[in-house]
Length: 626
Image (cartoon, rainbow, N blue to C red; front, top):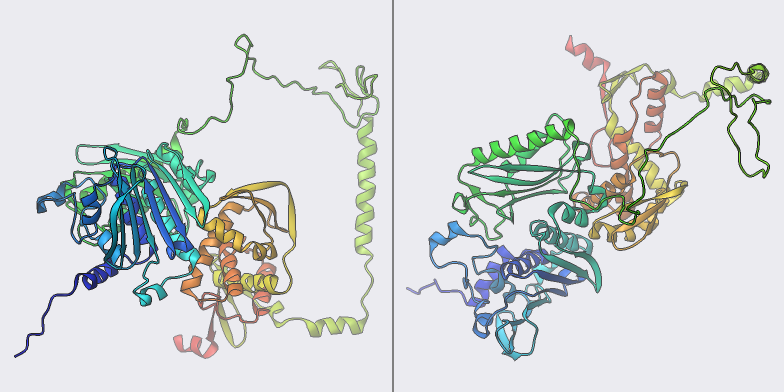
């Protein structure tokens, strides 16, 4: 009988392992950044080309590797972190399994340049698909530079599964954020296609969050702090009013390692349960320090999923700490010592006396008095005006008031007379208007909790979901704006500045013409800042930062969830952001107008997201109930 079991070649085994560890370019970024941090570097550069398809390079000034270590680190299960199985429960480093570099080398062209400070020369190593092409001494700087080129060159099926550059770079940016947020003492730089996207200097955690996510986060953050013998909790949470529908800014770290743990996320969200609407997610940046022996980080190849020895105890500490901070947020004012002051008094003369500003006013000043008391009038130069000086108890002349009120009364009576003198419509025109009257005009309707409209339409009653209907109305409005008639832009006298993450900023620049058709005139200031020169006419007072951010998030998500065409995706994304900002309808005429807009839509029974809008209940069905 012929034997059928055999050992896989190392190259094939490494490619299979790469399927677990390296899922996309962002996976390579994660492994290389973590290696740079473990190497003791204090300045790390990440260089990306074509969202990682062409090049992923990490350059650090860490301790480097010897000639032999440079070759050995690409072997499977080669590591400097472990010697026995017990070491798994005393880990303080990012990497430890020894699979990442071997997996990367199996599916890419890798070039490594490394040098230790005490060595006179460094090492060059080139590998293509697990095959070593060159291993030789070379002149190079202290530290390590590793370049990963042509990812998945020998696994075309995996390469075909990659998404667009915007999507893949968004994942890279997310992995970059996960590392920089928990190592704020290190300097980081991110480059994409030769352009500096983000440069971060060593700072405290709050400043690092603001530098990564924008200055608008400065006023959103509130600290969380708790120290016990079992666990230390530190970081920041966002104010309840800044919660979003997507988990876009939720970062949980254990021992400075980003982790994904549903129970810990639930501990934070339940603390907000009575402060934010259902479906909204709070932002948080929290690090938990626990004994390494009480956590198992070896349950998945990516080391993101973890198990805790006592999950209930950690849940209780985290939940109570967040609740405590939320309580302090609303009860106590705080001074911010973590950010630059808003006023610089360093150049003020030392002998200058500080005086409290005083405001004076004349209680007897009469703007309608053509003959003010002594002291009024213009100065001799005609360039300034001095307030009339009148004694406090002097009776001033009020004759000017009677003239003013009489003229106001005359104007009001004239307007009323013009409004009542309307021409009488011809009988034929009146009948024509009655024929054109919509059947909806006479519908009786009511709202239930501002969520549903119940109306007697047709042979029975109709129940209309207000939010879904609103989304449909806005969707068709914005689709028309993009394809036919752009929305009028109201130019701003003082343009507002918004800050976006690098990935969202690139997407905003790409969609700038379409945003202009939707009423938003954006002008790029630098890599992440935009000036909003105009907004849709009639949308005064809206939070432009919030609208644009959520619009870009929704557009990004819809590319995969609904596979919509670009115009439909744009209209759907903007409609979702605006449908929650409508005012409650209290009058029957408002409801009728809303229904008229809905039934004027090309599709009135299904929302752009595919959700039902109308449920019709016939008379016969109602009778069957009784």
